[in-house]
Length: 351
Image (tube, rainbow, N blue to C red; front, side):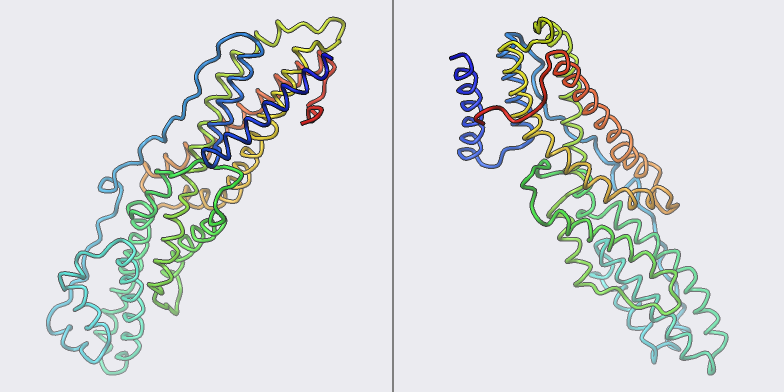
């Protein structure tokens, strides 16, 4: 009869999880942590720290980390000498009121176009006006540097990237939207357009494609979701492990024989940590390691502001290490308890 009673409680816990998920929409890792925390507290007849969902620290203001880019200055004589070249038209468009209020993405498109026409115009007038061609070559070298600054500004100051890096709309879950992996590809695409400045044959950025990639990044906001989720899991598992350590030690398993209380605790561990929290942890690890090469490149890039780099270091390295340690500590705690009671973390009977 005792076994039937234990199985019924386990089935009740599982049923409540499904009902809660169905009635109130997608369950998050916060829901799982809250249920896990509450069930452990009930079985152990004690109080545990309340589950909290801390926010990410603010990213440095865009005005403090963006590059100032000097405008290309062309005297009137040179300007008129270039009227048969596309450069004159491109520069003239930049001087309009609309051109002067470009978003970071469109400024980058402009800089890539400018580099392209500088190169083609230099080649076109090399024979007829070598002096002006040399001047265009000098401008081209300067604009290559400005292009890299514009690229860094896109990543540090654009609305799309700032939302993606600092303002999550959701936490990572096992039903995370399919555009998560697409956003990783988009982030690497944005990273790759920096290389245009180092190419001999410069082709302007496709504006529509750039905006589409930025829309994917903004929609998914994967880095921010990833970093906040790992922070939520780490903070709450640390607090729970600290409180749980002494409570599990009080659970009696005479001569290594598991009591009913020990079996119920094992089942709670399985239903909530193994079945719900650990799969989220697997996704955190998956997305983290896919993005590591990108963060490493950015941390080595001299065009980024030190405050921007420090934010990336804190989230992708320091906080990920803290998250990994919190999970390992919690798992080790349960392994010690289960070994003492000769139990294994298997699926509850009848669940």
